[in-house]
Each structure stands twice: as C-alpha cells, then as structure tokens.
Length: 364
Image (tube, rainbow, N blue to C red):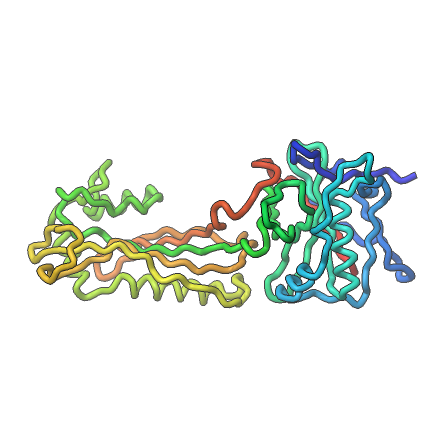
C-alpha cells in the first residue's frame, strides 16, 4: 500500500506544508517507455489530490519548451484557474495539487512541456503545489493557477493565473500575470554645489559606510553631518558642472551595464524610463538661490538623476547591488544600481514564512 502525501492549504490560515520534505531535489520521472502516466513521489510517499487518490501526470513525449508568449497564450485559453478551491465535504475536495495536475496535463496535451512543483513552507503543516515551464526566451517560469476563493477574489477578476516567485530562504510570492513588472533602478548623483549654510544633502543617497568615510576624507561632508564640508569644493563643483553632463554620464554607464548583463537579462527588449531629475539653480557667486525659472540665473546643476529599465525578470540570483564612487576629473560621482519588484504588486500568501524546499517533476 502506498504511503500518501497531502498537498493543500488550510483555508483561513493560508499556510502549507508537504509532509516529509528534507532537501530540494529533482524527482526523477517514474514512467516506463510503455506508458506516459506518472505518479509523484516525495520521500517515498505518493502525492495525492483532494479526493485522496494519487496525482497522476500524463506526459506527452512530443511536448517542447514554449516561448513565454506561447505560455501566456496557453494560460489564457486554459480554464483551470476558473475552478474554485474546495476543502472537502460535502463536495469532493479540489486543492492546489489538483490545480497543478490539471495545468500540467493540459499543457502537455497542448504540446507544451510542463513541470509539477511542490514546495515546503517553514513551520507549516501542509504544502503547496504549482507548475514550472522552461521557456526558451525567459528561462524558468513558475505559474500558480490555484483558483478563486483561496487567497483573494477581487471584484471584476476574470482569471486567476499568477506568476510565482520561489527562492529557498525567501517568502513565496505571487502576482497576477499582467502585474509582474520588475525594475532595475539606476541612480547617479554628484556633490551639491551650494553654500554649506543652505543645508543641502549629497550623501542621503549613500548607504555604504566606506563611501561615506571616503567622502569625508575628500572633504565633501563633515563627520556626522550631511552638509558640505566647506565652500571651496562647491566652487570646484560649479566649474566642473560647466563642462560635464551628469545625466549623459549616468546614461552611458547604464547602457554599459545592460550590455554587460544582456545574457542574464535574456536578451529581451525592455522599457527604459526617462530620468527623474532634481535640478537646482545658482547665481554667479555660487550661492544657492532655490529653483527659479527666470532668466537672471546663469547656471543650473543636477543633484541626481534616476533611470529605470522595466521588464519581467524574476530570477535575479546573479544580480548584486552596485554602490560606488567614480572619480570623474576630480569630482566623486555616486553610481548605484538596485533591483526591485514593484511594491504592492506581489502578494505573499504565506506571509514571511520562507520556502525551505522545492521539488520539481518534469514531463519527459
């Protein structure tokens, strides 16, 4: 008699666990050349659906990896996400393992190679199931089609297909497919060419203590203060800014970074947002005179510029934030690169509980 593993979610608690998780692994397919039917085994136990029967994957030996656009077209046509999550009597339970099975089998029938994914959430009693697709242009993509009525049911929603973000040690996150935008944020900033009495800031963008120490050594900030150290560097900054364009420097550096990482960015097109720029104006003597728009001011100075490239990158394990000072003809220029998923667009159904193990079984 087969030992059974239940994969589901407790309604109202929204926490899951697959019994017997020890460490991440790839589960080898159990089908023989004579059959395309596969059960899923985790730690020697068979995974079952809401009806208590083993989850059975039906694989198509001719299925191939899709493009991301082909995957989205399949998900739009597939109706699995329209089903309701059911916990049990008096109706037959239909839980996340059943959703993942049906999406898998429907995808394989449509000629798309699919994976069945089970994850273990720290401190939970049941687990969660979803699907994986190895797209040819976007890499590995996780899809969660668990239906309406489980985590949220917003008014007017017509589908419940979600992109999922899974990383060991990080919370499980999902977002509706049309809202999965992510961003790389680029910032370039230069010292503020202003009188120290104006109380303006340069290092408010700096988080690296070594960079702050270096700025103090160079005389651009006081110890424990965010103001300029003296008036003398300000005059130097004014002269520098007459012959240099910070926005052009930042844009050039951003383009170089994108070219350097085009492989990790999957070579896809992305949208570049034009810089958000903070500009101040000066009179002839270098004293800050606010933000006038009239013709009486001879010089404008860019405090900082920010650019964003937006796309659909979820696997950023290769990315390391950048924060450094770059000397440009004697002036320290701050260059910083961050990566963010758009705040509020990603939902954590298990709260901040971390993913402890990931199991994937592919249709072969």
